[in-house]
Image (cartoon, rainbow, N blue to C red; front, side, top):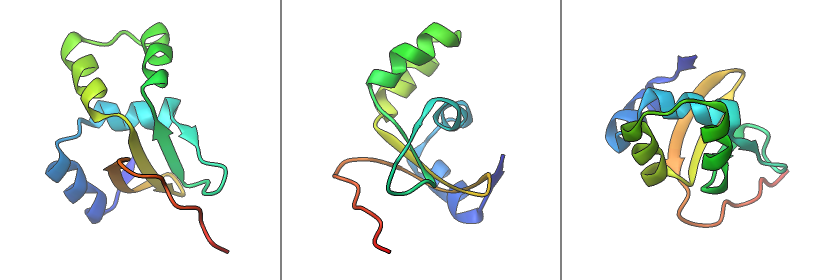
Length: 92
């Protein structure tokens, strides 16, 4: 996965593990209003546990990180952030 410089900086600042970003890309839900945003919620953790073998430390990191949003553009990671408010709809 290609990352922009901005995304690399955000991952370092927010202490997100690379494996968590890959899980968001694989299991996250795409927002209907903005197809570039992938959201991983608490409910998605049980789905991940059924399909992936997670270490205890990765599971704890994942539980602390969600709800997590990753913004992709043509398979390039643009930014990563925790969702702490309602995500605004995209205005066209």
